[in-house]
Length: 244
Image (cartoon, rainbow, N blue to C red; front, side):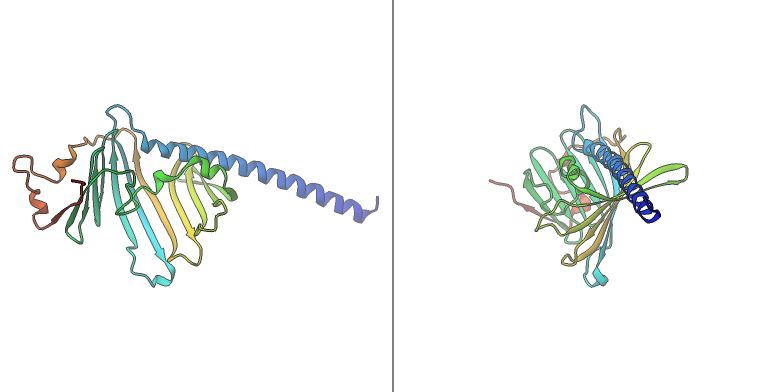
């Protein structure tokens, strides 16, 4: 075998080994991603008297800042097996198995509805807990970087979504703490037709055993003694959209 053929053969073997190594690394990264999503999905399933607490910041980056979209929204969600309390500067949402109160602060309006499956009627507040394992098992890993910061190992994993003509998402990038396999940040990159360039979800705190004590949902809206709106909602309009 002449020298040129030997070099070509060597390059082919090296390329094959390199491709196999990358594939194995990407498979390990996919497993890390699935574990992190599994941990996050626990938010939907509190048990006993436990209260889960999720504090996060959502950052919206519009294309060329041409749209009037809130750039940053900080929120805290508390969940137990029966109720949910979501608080932010723009909207608060109080729900139990029977009813829902959406308090829209800029409009000084409170929407009172029967509880339905679609809890994102007023605002998509559960984007993170909507991440589904089966969906992300089908995605393709196109990047995985490991690094250490402040003595904590992280993985930054980028996947492209399942092909769908209606899908406006270009990539998902997950920042995961490798030791606890917990999600710290999700960056969603959108295609050109979407009004946003990207959206970031930063998890500030995720506590599966919060000290927060879940109140009766109606006590967050009404004075128990008078059945009137609480004093802080005196100027708000109550809109009763329940089925009569």
